[in-house]
Image (cartoon, rainbow, N blue to C red; front, side):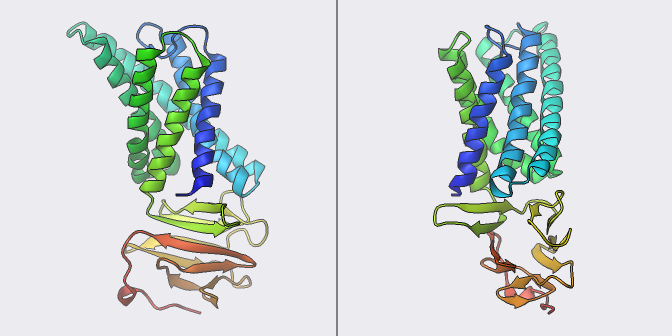
Length: 290
């Protein structure tokens, strides 16, 4: 378990709850059917803040690139806000239409609302990362968190309290972080101290490292694009993109090599350790090129 990532995401959830509480009037903001305008506003702010904070805070803590964090914040916040607000409108229309034919118990309607909200927020992360796999992973963490926290709020908290927003945000952050840690497949670890480890998840078709802000791993200096890790035939392959800057794998300078669990990647004085839960066989690996 990476406690830095876990703490960052849970802290993002708490900040999200506090921010949503600031924009909500003194009423029940989660009853979208009876209080549509307020519910729509709070839903968009809550999900937009969570998407932006979860995406940008790790960049600030690990890379200290504020311009990159700002760009990621804007992108993630806009996607999270727009998709969940659109989903809330669709849910309200469906609920109003279905109520004319079938009167469902209030508890059932609330269950479907929290379920639908978790689906919309998970879709936001899937669109943000352009990955259906990330959407499913996020959904598995958000769904139980939204249902447990939302049902608790509906049952025990019947007025506008800061505690309810903080509780919902903390639960969402906890569920998100737990799902990402338990269901991760491949990642790079950089050990800073015995207690602090910077973790970079390899989830997309290509993981890019360099000094540019658009890179998944942004280095403080060096070429714009230093190396790329791409998936080929079920294997992660590292390819150095610059001839003048040496990238060492297991202390050997290489241009191209398929990675296996435990490989070390040396870039200057920084060491990254590749980990993967997928089975790797050295018998089928392409030859390394120096």
